[in-house]
Length: 306
Image (tube, rainbow, N blue to C red; front, side):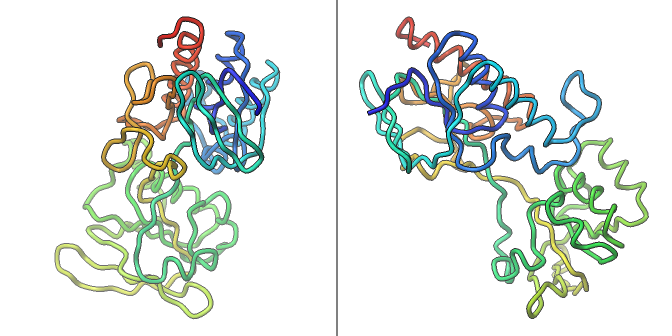
């Protein structure tokens, strides 16, 4: 069986930062990623809160993370992790391309978009329902679309969609957005954005493609049909932890519990970034988590303690 000092699961900002810090500390490590290296940030069009960089794209920032880790000699491998089998001095990471025994494991698998669960969402996914404005926005040029949600991601993506769509409805269950003030001000300045307050998605309707969205006013119960061609869903995230099979202690919602040094409930296994129980999920906090996790793993391997 292949043996490594550290296996990092996940190639987003947290995992790549852990790789950078771990490699600089002299650790023998490998980064496993089942999708695209860079994480969810690669589908973010604009990034304006990475310190020292006033504006960049998510894809460019992700590439800079990957290029930095690659420059240091980090090894990357496309693999799907099936489970982690804990041991006393080694943990086995079982993947679809072989098993790896590691002295320490860093879980940086991030989170995925939460589903609405309304009628029509599953049926029309890929046929008008999307979870990525950057990926699919151009398909709705000169058409009306809706964004579901009221946080930073929802309002930012709604602003992005105004580049293509003729009108962008933002359906939010409250009477004001939860997004940052600057983001809200940008949305308020757009003539294409139409807020639909105190409302939730009741059903997504159509035949072969999305044709309308039925929304329900949470205060009056009134139903309203909005003719449109696309629905973009941004109502939060859920942790990517299906491979854990109950291995680690987790908080409400499935987020991995850690201490301040990213140590989980199993010694030698650390978690970093959006997958862990944390009050803020941003690129900058994920990167910080990755640095902490790598240094904690280094101390664990060299001194037997994190």
